[in-house]
Length: 410
Length: 93
Ligand SMILES: Cc1cc2nc3c(=O)[nH]c(=O)nc-3n(C[C@H](O)[C@H](O)[C@H](O)COP(=O)(O)OP(=O)(O)OC[C@H]3O[C@@H](n4cnc5c(N)ncnc54)[C@H](O)[C@@H]3O)c2cc1C
Ligand SMILES: [Zn+2]
Image (tube, chains in turn yellow, red):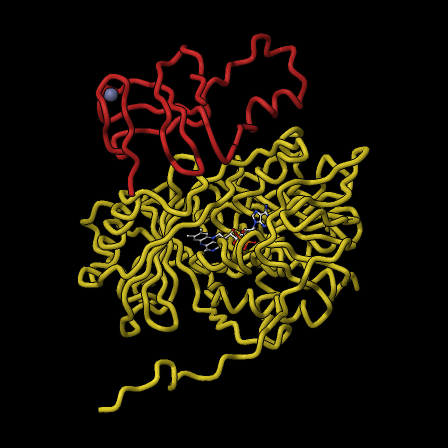
């Protein structure tokens, strides 16, 4: 046998989707962080508002943060009007996004089941279904038999520790391929003139007379008319350089995949009570996530007992997974707010805009928050859909308390 | 990976035996009635979130059940010191 040249049978390297820019001395808008939110914001700034002198600065590589670490669950079945507003806006954008970006995103509306395991779960879930309907969000309450019809591998027997008493079902919910979403937004924004500068960490915000004037980076100071934070788990660190404290705590959040399996799981199943959520990716791996690690940390890895408990919960719900092997586990750093809702809007410094606090659930919002945050930056005032998510709600008390109210994990 | 946390009373134990209590040294306001809304918001909702040394509370809930404080680096997870509730935050170099 003749030895084959390594890589000889691989396809050609695809064309670059964006070009790596050298930082210019100044931009109209600097976006900190090239995760999904930074990229979507850049795209809609250019597309909807004609603002194209924009740089997205990224300390690592494009979409190397939570954007490529999440479990890609997309849904809009939140309890409160404020949340339903922004997440449903996002879901509507998702429904046309492949066409809009002219890029395959593997967006699959396979529905999501949020399981109820206690009488209180059942009451809360039914209430949420009614609230969803009032907000034009598709939602149904399913009894255990109907749950089994939607997802035949869920164990609905009554004699387990946390029996399935029913579930809410949102048929329009689903999953997408997160890295494609990032690349699709980056390509489309680059075509409109947005620049991406990777390996360029913002080490300080420049503020003069209460107004932001630019950012410090190891590649020099970059002047900016406006600065928009999309730094997810690191937002506190960046904001602190301008003396701004935020009600955020950074925690590791872990997920894992199994080896590739035949299609067995047709939908997405989430269970807040036992802390697990599962879907099966297009290639065939089971994708599972759990809750956050309790202790604050900026390490992109978490404790093993979290994974162990998550697997125990998954096995009780899906006995068929008993023979599956874990292929890989990983973690991201998520910025959790006190009411489990994001902070999107103005900052105490003029010209600075905040988008943070998405915690464990911001992937689904990507197009919606990009749309609304771009509006906020372009007009210097919040879009009506993100107005309720202001920083000052913690002073006024107008919290958007989704903790426990919606199946909030993701 | 799991943290190995040195309980001041029991010695090093697995993280799974502990319960986390968040930032340490957050005192209840001395005169709550005098606080403005901004000050209440600070007390209720704002906690430090440094990437680096962080003084935090832990309870050894599956052991001696006592609370204590730790000084941990949130960038590396290294625990620099543990100390008893009421003691000042240790100075580390
Ligand atoms: C394991 C896991 C599972 C999840 N599952 C889901 C899910 O199923 N559904 C869902 O809706 N959400 C989920 N999430 C949450 C979701 O991933 C996040 O809310 C969302 O990705 C945050 O927005 P982003 O994409 O912009 O963040 P990121 O991709 O984290 O972007 C932030 C970027 O900012 C960069 N940055 C930070 N500091 C600086 C600086 N100083 N200078 C320059 N750049 C900087 C970072 O390197 C990073 O690339 C999950 C998260 C994790 C970790
Ligand atoms: Zn102890």
